[in-house]
Length: 288
Image 1 (cartoon, helix red, strand yellow):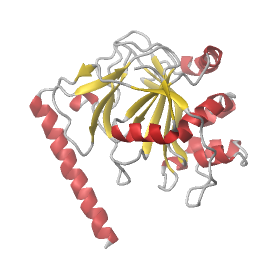
Image 2 (cartoon, one colour):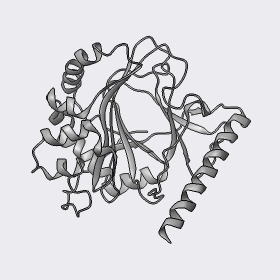
Image 3 (tube, helix red, strand yellow):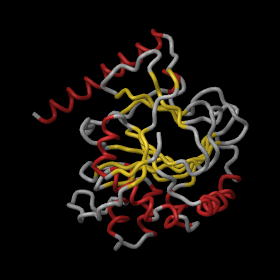
Image 4 (cartoon, helix red, strand yellow):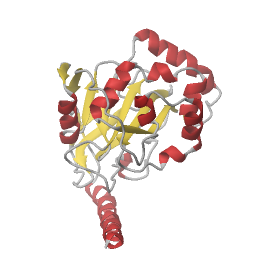
């Protein structure tokens, strides 16, 4: 579908309803070349790692933080939710010539969803933004997204989106929906910038990891948007964010069908549903 301008409220409604949306490219060709050129030496030293990362503190130390968190990227993040806090912030690569998805490949062919007790069907509460930094075609491990949530059954032959694109392709997806990384069958590593955000009102354990800790030490407070993203307002009322510009976006239509035998499809979902019910019952008892 063509890109058309949408308000933040419209973008949030799309993410709540259909779960995935494409943005106009956030980075220019020159910025993409700078990002890739700067991280190339780090990834070259990590070629033996099946899944290799450049973490947020490294993004600061190699002077890419301000490039990544440009005004354009901030518009994307603050259009998705008014009070975003980071819990993923890295560039990562996935090795090629692999026949299985790199996450949860042992069950449901990698399909999974990230259900939280804070999930809200009316608004996106946990969202990831991906920017492809390498060409991603059908054999390069494209991100795949089914418009079924953790509160629904994932069905055989259900339609799904396989996101393919050139470097710079930018899209956001609601983590309560089923998703996976397709196997990277190509002989080159797939590279992505990943930023995940949650609402400020929810406690974040991710900010306690050493990479975010070192990032917090490296970046002086005072930029309210960055302070919010780095969790400096956790447990407090954040300042009112500026209204993001209307952004050019497009809904991404399904272009494939899930093919998983019925029995392997149902058993993990039944176990997952029973586990979720048990967790909710425990939460309910603790609140009494």
